[in-house]
Amino acid sequence: MRHAIAALSLLVRDYDEAIAWYTRCLAFDVVEDTPLGGGKRWVLLAPPGARETRLLLARADGPAQQAGIGRQAGGRVFLFLHVDDFHARHAAMLAAGVRFLEAPRGEPYGTVAVFEDLYGNRWDLLQPKR
Image (cartoon, one colour):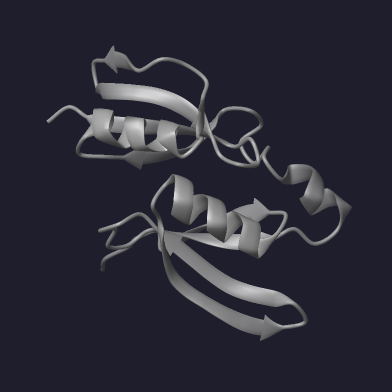
């Protein structure tokens, strides 16, 4: 029996601002955007060429969820974006206004730099070693 993580839920303040940022800054594709009624939507995003795992944008509902926006991993790196050409992707993200928290560095597992999304969630931009 095959198992896969299909989506990760990401708390956001607003669907449209999150869609705009992820598509502009990270070049993600909108896989699905379906109204569910009551202002809720089923919004799935994915990096270009991704086959399985998606981000489900979940608009925060109530004070407890709103407090979690940008803090889903308690200040640690939350998500890892693998790329084939680190330097080209890094340059494109800088040009789009993405805030990197460090300069690129080489690690035994690849080339990496930590960045923040529009809400402050930390991500690794990572080109794994082959």
